[in-house]
Image (tube, rainbow, N blue to C red; front, side, top):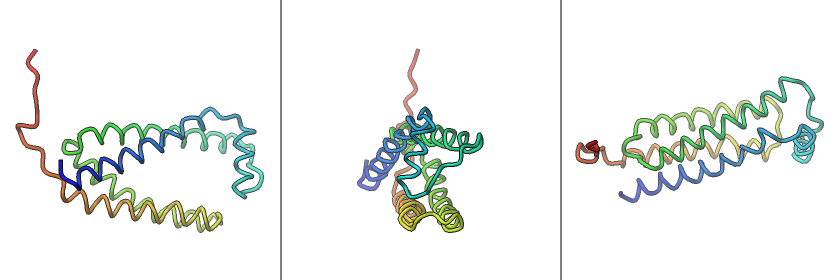
Length: 145
């Protein structure tokens, strides 16, 4: 494994582990979510079914995606096309989230630390992706049973 490959593994593992921190949010009582919402300077959290659904389903989605990143980090040569896709998605979604955050009027700290870092990490991963060695036939071990 070359240096670029190790760095991609590190990025995927860090993102995967941090994303798993979303799991508790799926089960948080609404009162705790509302309190956190207020501490972020976002005021009172609307108590509507769609808000509750979006908060919990997004947390579950993040956790599932994060687990997939951890699996991908175990064999980056095999998952090379997926890594390229995720890298481009980070770039695109980073710009989309920047626009959404600005349009929604979120605090500057939120806006700066959400979309732009995703764009940077996406471009870094694209650069590193080009240096992942292709999977060789001998790397595919077929067990005889």
